[in-house]
Image 1 (cartoon, rainbow, N blue to C red):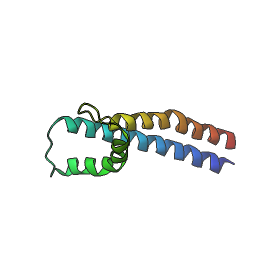
Image 2 (spheres, rainbow, N blue to C red):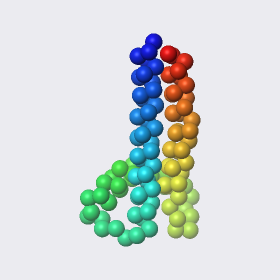
Image 3 (cartoon, one colour):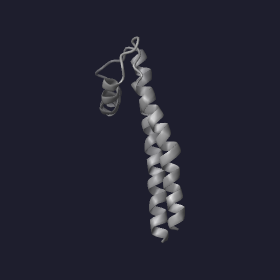
Image 4 (cartoon, rainbow, N blue to C red):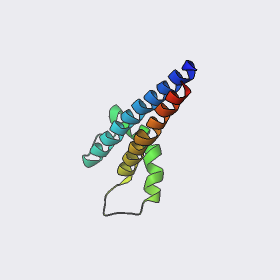
Length: 98
């Protein structure tokens, strides 16, 4: 059924786009942590508000390191895994439906 195929392809494409955008948001957050940004800047507040719910639980699980926050790296690896595994699986499922 072509509707199911197009639906799954669209879901895979949107998921890939959302993961890519979130990856860049995590990278921007990591770069901001190297400098001392203005905490009242709306862009900085947005980045912290969007990334903190994902980074905080990972920070709690990771052992303390020498002043390095490795949680963005863990999130980036998870995003890479989802992009290289889940998105192609969705495309493959879509092709098998059609």
